[in-house]
Length: 318
Image (tube, rainbow, N blue to C red):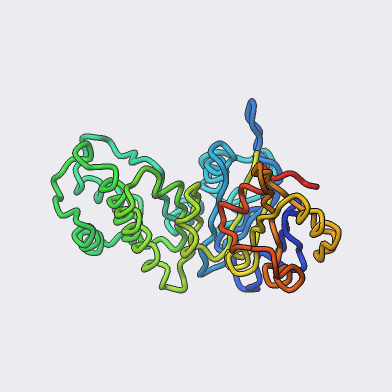
């Protein structure tokens, strides 16, 4: 399936399709809509190709968590379909759904285990839910992450330790697809990097896939293969992550310079998207190389994921 930005922030001929690999997708979301009072997911589509990491980005309240709930089956969509490992989830019997869920692991933004449970109790709970759960591996992961107190209660764990416990249990469960909802939110920089290292190591197995929801886009700069941005319940950008950092740029221009670029704009029907900075204007550039060739005197810096999000949300089309 091919997706492009409906806001036309990027030229499709430059970005290309979202999923180039014709191989299987462990998660396929097609035209999913879900209405609540005051908020709606609208016609959301995304793929998680096997062996890849897809970063789901967007502002708080954009719809990331709602989409996660739909994917997990915690809430049913009003329309659309979700396929896990090539199987239409809603068409399965309860027993078939249970077996399919054994292949999916979830890590939430908060540690939702009962406060009185010990680390060992949490492991026992995962053993009941995941027949392939490897207790020895879980203990080893906990030890490697500095969580080597099996009788310690959940209430005694720090935010970072609670997240590491979730990861250890999920990674030992035998899951092939991980769904992570803001896994590094609220963690200090050192613990955040430890968590990301754990995820990178897990992804070395080509049979593993991951959908990571985060508003901390720097976490995805060196983790995600693809990016999907949701804004107000809609997908507004879907592309390979490298095509942002390797291709796109931000030009800082005075008013007269912007007018020259506008008159000689080399990117066809791609809209000029600008943020007014007062003394100068920031311009989203689809290709730094092309821009430098035509306007060598104007500075054009590499764009980050945050930059592109800002232009899509706050940029003015001129």
